Structure formats: structure tokens, C-alpha cells
Amino acid sequence: MLAEVKGVQLEPKKSAPTGNMVVLSACSGRETANIFKERKHGLFTYWLLRKLKETEGNVTLGELQEHLQKYVDYTATNRLNLESGQKPTVQTSPTLGIYWRTIRLR
Image 1 (spheres, rainbow, N blue to C red):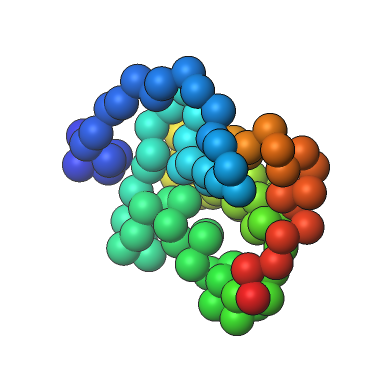
Image 2 (spheres, rainbow, N blue to C red; image 1 turned 45 degrees about the vertical axis):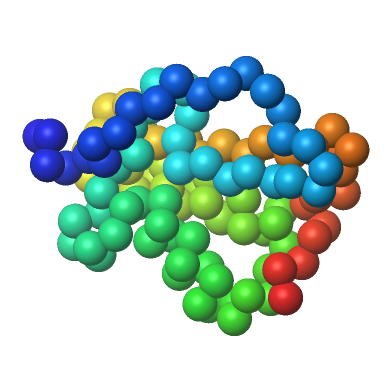
């Protein structure tokens, strides 16, 4: 079982990003960032790269975040049969408000 998950556990500091920073994380709280063995990537990384490839980077951060939330957790619970799932998170600078969702990567 241990070979199926990432090997680092960190307790995040309780601080908000500053400036124009948007942080997408593979999982929340004490969840585990799982490996998608059949795709030879982490689960989060696989779905992130897939969306970037499909859109050639022409995607907003909001669209990317929605894609990650949907497919990472779905894959964790339905294809990898993980009871706890894996829920990606996003943290943004307070100065960005909801504007961060409209930022286009390309």
C-alpha cells in the first residue's frame, strides 16, 4: 500500500497567498496525494497535464480548478477504489478576489 502513495507528509502553515499568487494543491488537509499507477504520474499531475495538453494551455484557472476537482476525486474513488478520495484545493491571494477564476494561462 505504501508504494501507491506519495511519501511526504507536511503540515501546511496557516497563511494566505499574497500578491497575485494562486496555489493549486493535489489534496486537502490530511489527505494523501495518490499515484495513478497505470498513467505513471501522480493523480493530480496526470489530470493537470491532460487538461493543459487538451487545451494547449488556453484555459482559465477556474476551468482548470473545476476539471481537477471533478476528475481527481472521481478517479480516486471510482477507479482506484480509495474510500477517502482525493480533493484538490485552491488558495488565492485576498487581493485577487474571485478574479483569479478568469485568469487565462495562455
